[in-house]
Image (cartoon, rainbow, N blue to C red; front, side):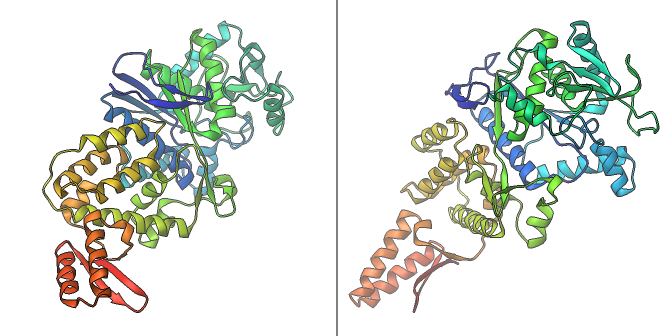
Length: 471
């Protein structure tokens, strides 16, 4: 089996991936908090996780993928302050919290389909695993990691010597960040809620009985309880956005290792932010978020344009989002699909030399920009069309651009092409024709033009220069 190297946030270096059980991978990806639509920044994280999963599968691993649905317990403040986001969503839209959760869960799953993201093997909702969360809190209580305040049961982070091992930030810096929202009853600024009590003066829509009183679980405990429940001893890879590192994932590790006495996940992977023009992070709290609907679909763009745009930027690098970048990605994707369609219907053999290069790129911490460059090299190579097609469709098992479907349907989009987008064969014919025209051999020029046309391209001699487009 080929070696795969992944950047592990825990060690802050690229490591060779070695699963706990041979040929099997346990993968946990933090899912959405379903109180609103997923924005493009959220979806970028799920796209990188999809590439990871597809890469593992491409390397013949059997992947057990678990994703949670946070439908309770995620408060509007990071430090366990404020209102539950589901309850706030219910007030905003005049629906019940349960209706909000159901509606936005479906909307999220619809987005995954539009982006050609593979579904997890297991979906797990926080509200359907309350007993597991309560049991884990009981275990932590027995081990003296908890204490009670007027608003809930908290985890004492001072009892964890390496609490900052994922963030790699000085503890003082983590504490300073935690002081943004002050809870005077907390023993330490970084302590976090395991169970929150329902308000005494009002009834919540989502609440449960517990050994400590009626209430609801904290946000962090759900991922610990459910990943341990559904992945058991196969705790290989845990993923999320970089915004999860300092709080959510740090707290997951602390409570999980305190409860089990064992290492939690071996590998932690995090995707970088998507920024809007001006370099500002896209976030629902800032009211500047773009969705697939308002950023692409309403503008007549295929949602896969966003997937293609993502592939052009490494997942650990921040990505800029604008109408210009989407237009460029749309043109790039159309060009790629057009070239694939023109290869014809016959599927030959996968070229092993190019396949080795592709594996080397994708297995090197999911280097999708390099993987796309290799596809370009395949198209420009002197391979026969059938082998080009087989090779590219094989690579698309990882890239997920649905090239096989477009190719089968013959979905050509007419547009002007750049010379460098063409295959080496067509580039050579264009060059020969230019030489013929320069020497005023118009008969040869016309012959070459007709030959280029048979390959699916139209060559025009305009005042502004040579124009090449698809038939």
